[in-house]
Length: 632
Image 1 (tube, rainbow, N blue to C red):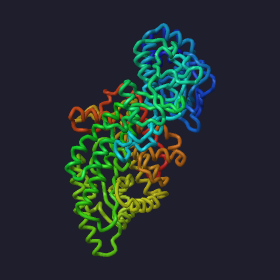
Image 2: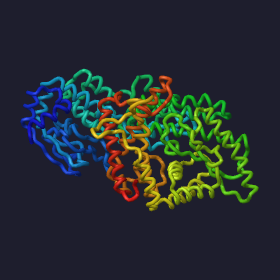
Image 3: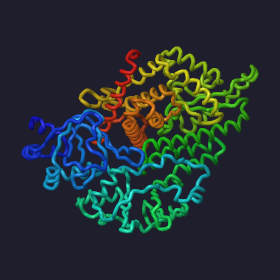
Image 4: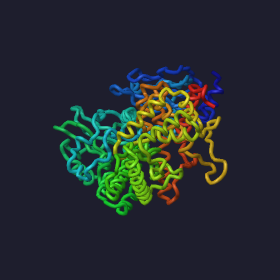
């Protein structure tokens, strides 16, 4: 190891870039270097705390914790990132696992060296406070994704649901005698936004939140070794598990608090946040669904539909994950589509044959953000005779035109490629749909591949859902193990390479309206969705949501098994960038698009974006290797 090379590297790594040459030389004089092959645990949860701060020179690691029977992802770190910062202030045991996911080389800096540097150099200390505490403590509490976020029955939920059913269980607790630093470590390790503190008897005595750490510690420069009691709030306002949600709302409003301890017989059973209640308040998606269900004409649906986009801003402000936002918006839009279809049925009478209204594209994957183009089709039962066939054609022609125009009035633009049920080609009996897929799969022209990929993300929205189930079973049986057809899908999955150059710089538009910008949908989200779809088709997976596909493939697909967490993390990140960008455009009255300027991203966002694009590119390379005989 040549010390000059180490110094040159450290000059590029925050916070060491703030140091003068003399200081850099002093701290690197005792530095060492270690090589860790892929799959090596640099740090093990519950094991002895490392005596070093690790600086990644080359490679990548994954940070996670073991929580009961599952691994809980915390972070990925690569070149120039640090490992072990939170432990340099103390602690005898490591609270997280750190494992290399590539061959990795690290510089090892002694704990005492970095401690002395923190105490003597304000710039370094400020960097760690802002960068690390903000990064690891700004994570919101795990979303209640397994619950149905939009209930039927309107606001009666407020008066019928006990808080014990809504609150988050398994609350992480800690002693009130620990330091601020230890509390921050616990919150970071468990990715939680609040921590309950208990006294010697195990009873709740205080609570601290992300906001407390930002407002009372980071912004005030408070010593992180100070007792956490100095910044905790006393949770006087509490709720019983049997109380109804409207009582919890009243307490929060009256006392201006954002967290309620949920108790049963003086014992802590859970915690309820303002975000949990926001989902069922009058300003939430629930109230819009209630209004949709109460309408009987398309004209009265129009003002209700204009409120849907505003929900995005509300959810963003509450720190909801991108996948949860798209799930909520999709479910609301489904309600709107179903209501228009019900109005159409009332207008045209009972259909001559059972049918299924299907959606594809982002709507089919439950990944809608704002109102996108109409992407829908219709499948109906095979007619028994020519007379029934003619009756179905006439009925569904007028029916689908009415639904198309109704959706247009409610803010859903027409599909430029005419992939809509109003197009006769895309409203057909089941046997015609089977013929479509047979032709597409057996003769995979460019158009056929694009058509099949479009409809592989299809989802039933209304009607006889068995029709789609039959069609899906038929198509998946044809595709699975069909290497030739999958080769064409693989070619599509590698067509759009992520916008990252050889020197890890962003590749942007060189001229035109979007100069110096990149298309986050086409170059980021699209390739990720395409490669996950390919793997789902390989294994005959029925689900259409990208995240659902990834989770199901964890134990079924070798590539996904290795990169599942990275892919989910990347999907959430790209989707959130897109939603935030489009929401800002909407607020400013601009046309919504997918072009973002990388220069407007924070340094942390730039780094994560680059890592995300590199991951997608890496998996595309694996696809090329997997299908090398069929890739052209």
